[in-house]
Image (cartoon, rainbow, N blue to C red; front, side):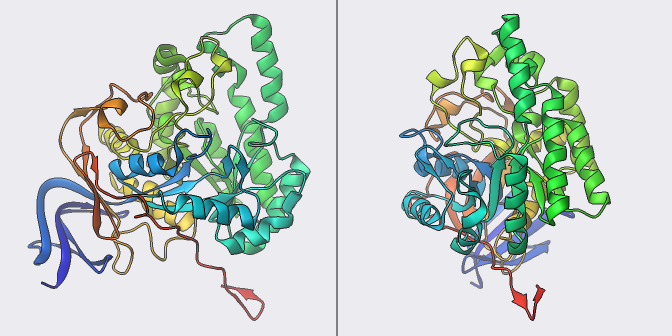
Length: 459
């Protein structure tokens, strides 16, 4: 047989949907995408109406935020079950801020024996050290840099003030990598938090009141203006507000590289129903907003203003998400296992083409992190990273699947019309029917292509 693997079904590409199409794989790479009668292969699956998409690249994962909790052994297991074939892990690890080439190497050495899917890494800076190590981290293989305009923790998740942010962006610009930033204005958030505490409100309402829209939008202007000033691609790693995507579009119109990521929780959960019901288990920074804003974000997807969709996945232990004092809970939720089916569900319900799924969760993340020489598309020569979804109703239950280190999820109870039935990494089946087949160590560290400088010109 000419091919190792042939899958036939509805092939979802970034620019079109091929009904009764097929994908053929040889030596771990996509070999052919076609229409009609599929060729023979050593393994051949005629999948009917199933959706065949490029494996998702989750642009925002926190595998190590809580010591002795999740780690890559679990985050990549959830990923494999959910059709995510590459995760990009954040640099704010408890006990190891990834802010040097040595820290990058430590993390690669730590993650490699555990990973069941491929992984790329973000780097950051120690505020006391500044941008001195940015170049060495780029050479060590980080795929982007991450900063925050808000200080969650002075050591693990520090605030980078404006002058230092500008210096860091200027140091990143020659590498061609992107600077991603957490978008909440520190001074504004702290002022509103004090007002909420003084009011005596401690229930589910407290979080949204402590971080109103202006706190997010002020920070976005700072981030994009810093990019404009330095020539560095500027990226906001999560935006809960339609207005934020308008701000980015205005900067792009003026010729600057300004992009925004939307997390799946902002497209799924709302404040008046879900945060009210879940309390701390729906506490996320920036906050989940009212339903009207959720629908506005879906319109931004349809209009092409969203660059990436990610999870911002973090599996806090339940005791850190169940404090009746809303502001005392840790921020963030797990989502790796369910991002792809949630996006497919939301798009279908709103008549939004599924081509956006291939673009926002595969093609664009691969471009963003300069991994598109090997990742992100069902294109001949690229890694055969594939997710198959079948039209089978299921109700999500994080504990029942067995693929999560925690038994809770803010998505529990959501009915999914399409279910991940198989995930392939470089042509090998790593999950089937919710059961993860990949052994730890299956995943590889992936790094961007180095930027080539030819006779003084960048290529």
